[in-house]
Image 1 (tube, helix red, strand yellow):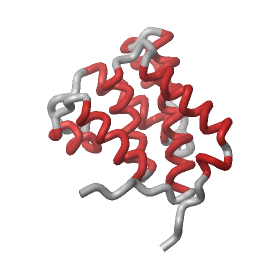
Image 2 (tube, rainbow, N blue to C red):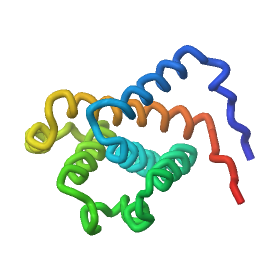
Image 3 (cartoon, rainbow, N blue to C red):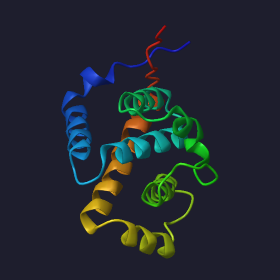
Length: 148
């Protein structure tokens, strides 16, 4: 079993910058639950156990229903997600999987209809920052703490 590199302390300034961006997004124009859903969905796609644990826990602490957490990976087929959340999740998947294919114009236009310019900029920044966290934590083997 490999041990994670304690990168938090080795690159303090960049980590502090990522934390500042994350904090800004939690107090920006988007609902905090929406931001956490985006963080959780991108973390599912990227397979980051540390971020999955963190953001699922944050959503539960905000009173999120377990059914929505359980069905987030299949949000298209699952009930209980608003039109705005669905637009954000679709945008999250497209931006997270950008290497697979460019974001289609139709999806860009749909996102522009669902969100103000500022909201779409913040949503895209949220996706960018969680993808950065996912890549750091997953590749450097940062595991969630085991809890009883």
